[in-house]
Image (cartoon, rainbow, N blue to C red; front, side, top):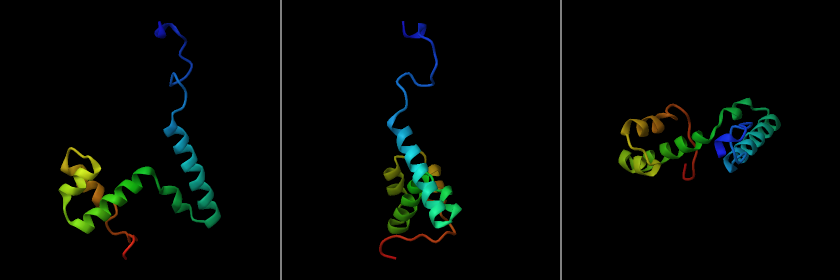
Length: 96
């Protein structure tokens, strides 16, 4: 019955909450980048925060298994990649 309906949209029930969050995040990021005249801010994505948290946790605990569990990874290589994303970059966090 549903398959007989015309397929005019990619999603049947329209945009999801994640679509709205992503659109708002990108709009705010664009505004801030223009206001501060810093185009590098456009390079920040949702996963940037996830990798940043992984790096901070690894630096604090030096326990890759803790970070793996925190990120809910099944494979260690994925966790190692996430913690190395910020290698060579200066990372600021509370307590530095």
